Length: 110
View 1 (cartoon, rainbow, N blue to C red):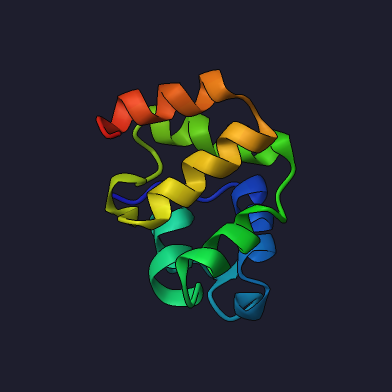
View 2 (cartoon, rainbow, N blue to C red):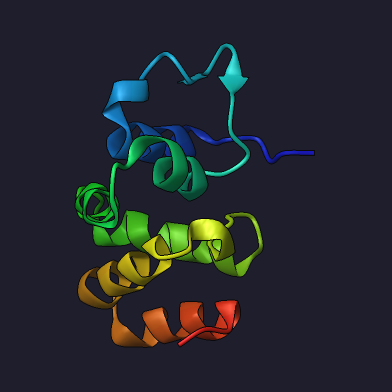
């Protein structure tokens, strides 16, 4: 069963994919995706650079929130493929190298 998106999840998703606002996520209808980052990576971002630019729109607190979700198994980061490197780089820059290491250790890469 997919997790229920919170208002915060919806705000983050809409920041990352403003072109999807109202079309893919609405409070009334729920949401189409079980995760935030995977659809951004696979459906909206045109390249790894685009994925990174989208992530850079988020505040350090929002990035850290996504890391928390990933570490809790509520956000799929393992299927991001090359975009995972971009996520780790943004976590390193906006949150901390230690937090990025937690994410890398969790995923078992690098």
